[in-house]
Image (cartoon, rainbow, N blue to C red; front, side, top):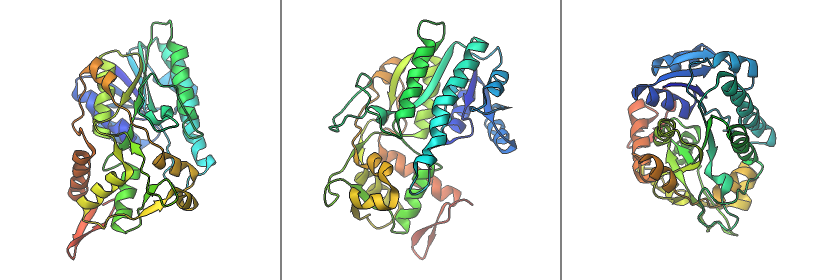
Amino acid sequence: MHIFVAGATGVLGRRLVAELEDRGHNVVGLVRDDAGAEAVRSRGGTPVVGDVLDRPSLVEAVGPDIDAIVHAATAIPTDAKPSAADWKRNDRIRIDGTEHLLAAAREAEVGQFVAQSIVWVARQPDGSAFDETATPNPDRTTASALEAEELVEAATAGTGMDGCVLRGGWFYAPDAAHTRQFGERLLAGRMPVVGSGLLGRRDATLSVVHVDDAAAAYASAIEHRLSGVYHVVDEEPVTLAAFLRTLADELGASAPRRVPGWLARLAVGRDTVRLLTNSMPTNAARFRAETGWKPVYSTYEAGIERVVERWRETGAIERVDGRYVWRGEV
């Protein structure tokens, strides 16, 4: 197949380009500069210059031989305390980017459109388990994801184009910005467990997925010509406390202390606290039944072990005087 990937230089997109090429497909990756072009070429893809926020550039970039388009572009804020303005670009990429890519897909008569979304757009107010049939419950940071899902459904219903939305769990990987921030802050003793309640003792249950497995899921969705909404998560939801303590143990760092959400809001903002203290337990049963996909890192323990192993291999962490220190990019 000939597959067009928007967001080809991101943490998911880089893996998706390589995954699709390894499966024998031809990938065209959307880039904005020479560094992005090299990243796509190094993974076997063909770069094309354009911007998801520039419709004419997309219409020109998507050729008539493209079989499927993947919208994997996001701009999730990585600042410690993101503001509403920080989320605005991500909202534009989700909404305007989806509209522009759908327009390019129609122009080129593309057969399939696959869009990235997030499972917590449908988490339930009471924290109970949910699946793809649950009524969405968006907040200000996830409303654009739901709007993008609706755009895909409206644009593909009753047409010859299959529209598929993959709602991913909370992504983690050795090169994912938030995972790296967790590692650095745990080693520095500055990464608390944020919980709800007066003393922060109530933990949220999170559904997560290693980005390697997410990329394989996208490739499977394309190959199976899926349409509709699917959840892509690993096999074991985890509390934030368990995730951070496991990561701390692998790093040989001290166990993180607890901080109540009402206090953490002063440092990281209401949106981050909402993400970390509201449960989103779900599963990928529907997706697995349709595709046979099975995550390599079936639980967070296996994934975290590989994350820290990769940090050691790349020199992101280094043992000094019997303990690891964070070196970051090397």
